[in-house]
Structure formats: structure tokens, C-alpha cells
Image 1 (cartoon, helix red, strand yellow):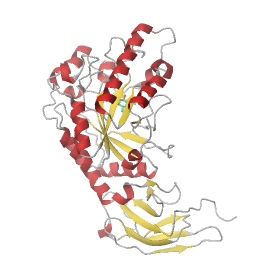
Image 2 (image 1 turned 180 degrees about the horizontal axis):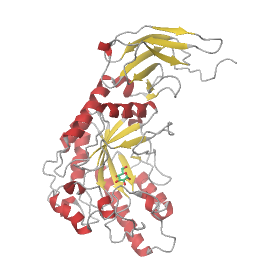
Image 3 (image 1 turned 180 degrees about the vertical axis):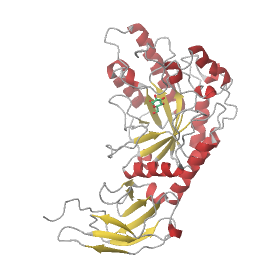
Length: 423
Ligand code: GLC
């Protein structure tokens, strides 16, 4: 586990929750856990999981058109159903579903063919494993429940032989994933039910370092891992980099046909620009149907975000976090050499765009995508205080859907004034 430059450069990843829960379109694994349906009925979804139109190459092309640099696939979610041909359990889509294929193998190969990095999600907990004692206090069924009703078993309260067997199984599966697929990234989850000691996290981290020293690892390993994973909401202030916001397109990770609360392309552009403006990555969720196809509402949104990213590629790829709050009303990014500043204007600016506290002289300002040059001037400034930069608003024909980006060529590396002015 080491942070790799490809990760911070990628900016966008696609998070695929694909599993038997898509057959009935119920909450991934949680339907089982929260008794939304009887265990037997949840598991009967195995019989309907065909993956009959699963085409990993088509996924890869779609993700690439979305502007993503990597993807993460649920190799095994909390329900314990593996998407690869694991030797440590009978419970896989290869052995127990009509799909009968190693979907992880096909996915990893297809992503790489398309030039995308291949990540794998693995749940530390397995609610179907006979040796996995559940530790949640019973509560009335509720689909989206993750809260303080979990209590780690007190030391000694655990059936230690069963727990050791469980950890052997988990370690064996992680080893399989690492040695068979050599994933570029590992995305762990489900850690909340036990402590780092109970999970034997240091040992697990060592295994990953030994077998896959270059793999990037998320931080749901309780003290281990390379990057933070805020979920389902933009952080108000920038977390310590590196970090990645995981976000659903509608309100669900897996396929749920009744959830039509899809974010608009405009909202996704805003999430994306604000995330990269604070130095993070966006990991956007996709929940394919049981046959492997991606629903049109999600595909269209991915394509829409991709169009915006393509037009604004210099502001995205190879960029770093932009101005801290207070200098510009909106997100911004900086070129890696810190000499070009990209201002994102979500709503069409009227009259002017103002930047405060910029010490640099500005050589040229243009609209990204059309190249049209914009006039600018300064007002004010006293001694050490640089005054304000006013940029003429772009003409209507220079505006981009969902957000126009202005490129400011500076006379050197960005220098900011962050004080409070003269007394
Ligand atoms: C939560 C959910 C899980 C989902 C994950 C994605 O941990 O429990 O179902 O896979 O978020 O980040």
C-alpha cells in the first residue's frame, strides 16, 4: 500500500456495486441484514443472477467516456457473495448462479485494455459466513441503517476458534484477489463492527504490502491505508489530502429501479469540480442490473460529466487543489506547475468575475474550450495588499453548459495574499 501518483491525477473513478441484490433491486446486502426480506428469499436471488449481458469492455468504454481514470468493483460485498471463483467458499456467482463466470477476471482485463486502473472493493464483514458472528443489536427493519447500534464484542466474549477461522477465510480471499488479479487499488469496507485488533489489521496491512506493494488502499482499515473516504456529501473544508468522495448518482449504491432520485449532470459537475478544487477525487456510483447492463439514467449522466471533463481537461487532468475559500466564488484548480489558475463559474457570470488576494500579475485570461481572450483590470491595492482583479464576463457563446472555466496565466507560481488588509 502506497499512494501512487496515478490516483491523485485520475480525479474521477467509477464505483460499481454489482451483486445478486440487483435481481430484486433491494439494498445491497442490507436487505439481508435488516430483515427487509427473509434470508431465504434474499439468497434466492442467486438463481436470477444471470449476467447475461455483462460486457466488461462496454463498461470500460463508458467509464472512459465519463472521464474516469479508474474503477472499483464490489468483488465481495457484506452479503459474502464473491464475484470471482474463490476457492475459500462455495458462495460465488461462478458456482452458485446462472452467470457461472468469473466476473472479476473479465472486469480487471477489460479495464486495463481501456487504459483504466482496476480497483476491487472487499467487505471485511461477511454476514453470510457461519463463523462471522454478527454484533449488531436488533432493530426494526430499516434499509439504510448504519449507526451506533453496533457494539464490538468484548475481548473474551468472542468464540475465538470461529473468529480465527473467519479471519483465515478473509485473509485467504484477500490473498486470492491480490495474487490473481493484481488490483491497482483495494477498497475495504464493513470495518465498523470490530476493533483494529480484532480485525488483525496490522497483519492484513502487512500481507497487502508484501503481495501488492504498489496497490493503493483506502483507509477503512482502521489506522492503515493511503487515503480518506468521505461518503455521500461534500466535505465543507478540504480534508487532508489524499482523499476521495464516494457518491451515488441516485440514492442507492446497487440497482434499485424505484429510486429515480438521480442527480442532474449539472449537480454532478458541481460535485466533481468542488471535489477536485479541494484536491480530492470523486468516486461515482453505478449500480448495474442483474444482467450487467447500466441503466440509461446513469449512463447518460456519466456521459454528460465526461463531456464537461473533456472540454475542460487542462483544468482537470494533472491539476492540483486551487484557491482556498475567500478568493473566488466557486471552485478552482491549479496547473501542476502552479502557473495557471482555473476558475470555475457554475452560473453564467454577469458583468465581471472578481478574484481577491492575487499577488501575481496576470499575463492572459481566456475561456477554456473556446480560447476567447477576456480583458481584466485591477482596482485598489495598498502597500502589501494586492487589490482586486476584475475579469470581463465571457460572452454567451463562450459559456459552457454546467460551468464555464476561465484560465488565468500568471507571471509565475501562484502567490496569494491572505491577510486582512491594512489597519
Ligand atoms: C456503506 C454501505 C455499503 C456501501 C458503501 C460504499 O458502507 O454500507 O453498502 O457499499 O457504503 O461506500
